[in-house]
Length: 490
Image (cartoon, rainbow, N blue to C red; front, top):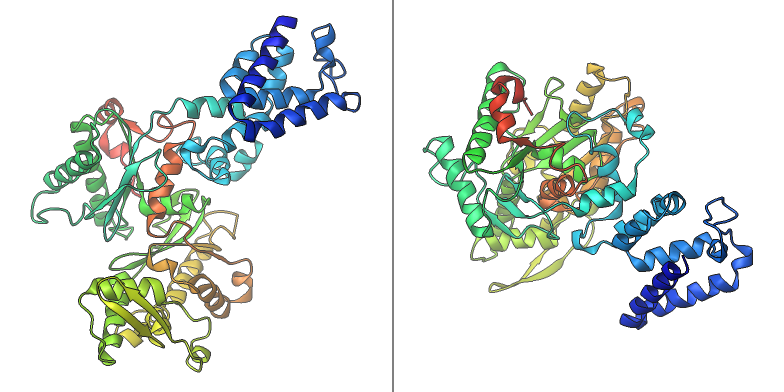
């Protein structure tokens, strides 16, 4: 035992010598624990001793030594005896290791959310069950460390985002697969060309890694024809990928992944897409099409076009829509009170590379105002707040669950949803539009990842300890099960 203790402290000293700046404080902390050992609980006092002088080491000091040794050495120490295994398996130690695991570059709260609510795969268990789960972060760390990574593709509505699950963000973009190649070609051929192009650009063999695919929101209705169209699309996706020898496939609705990225399993996702805005109610990860998906006939393209019209009215010269889109992304915002904003001086300027300096005034907030007053932009549809309010009315009337608050969390998604002031304005309009009993507790969450929300939702799933088994379908499973029973509507 003395030899083991000596070996442990030699390892601590070596690590500290390799990184004096970061470890000197830890070593000093260790010395302070020795000085205060009389005031600390020791292994012997906790009934975890082995006998001898080693039992006099304070437990807190023992934990500090394990932190310096790292996860691999700590796991090896746990096999010495049952007493040490109890200490090494302490969740606080492995939470520390997970929090300092930089290669995934994933927020800690996202890790906890995923492991608590998503580890079982689909369908998700109810929250009551999740709250009773006692997670072993030592086990979670071990499983996550064995992940080899996966390919994540967000089909998008304007363009596709793709990348490696170990990357901090998507590594490339392309046209969405719904618009990729010759749209008159059969869907199978277009999808085959699309995925082959993505794999070539990533320089990855399809047979080597699982894939998480975000499928754009389409075929919105709950009709039999819409269900058949969704089934056919998903069946074609799986067929193409398995024909390319992809080992495992996880294809999920874009709105569902955006909801997961916001660390929610239930709520209403407002996805401001390229051409349309969709309001999607989701309960425990399932799109509630029977409740109703609302679709508004305006999206990012319409806002960009409206700003162009306003600029043309002021005889502003610009080279392309890229300039207009850049100005929208950098200068435009949503006014909390539109009428009051008209009385203010809102002039601001921005330099577009290659185009020069542009100055906007009221155009800055008039652009986003058409989300709430579509007729300003010549669009005959309801305002965003009315569409979300209508969806909430349908959710409440459906009584699909005893929890009448599941739809009161509104998650924004899409690049246009990043306009400053949009969450506050939407929440204000909803509270004014809905009755008090329904508006109480409403919360609008801004898109933390902007247009890449669905991609980050896929990243969250692909880095879970239970991936790919809990979320993916393999080629053998796809062949063994009848396609009609396996492919659900999303």
